Image 1: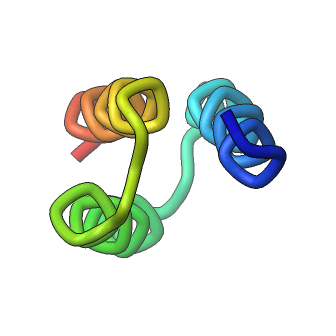
Image 2: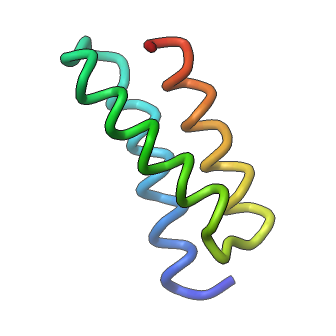
Image 3: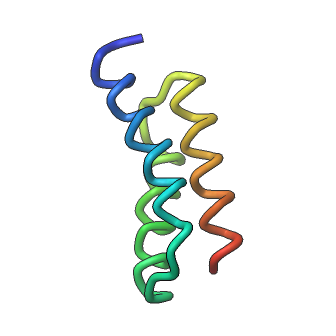
Length: 63
């Protein structure tokens, strides 16, 4: 795994925990839209894909 993908994995993990606080619905909508695009069009390895999918599932609970 590259240093960049490890860094992104850590970011995704922190992002999941940041959803514990309530934010404006528009913020969640924008994050969801951007991450869905990355999931669909990004060049991700399996671990990155799985973590990003986990983030999106957490977001879906909030939307």
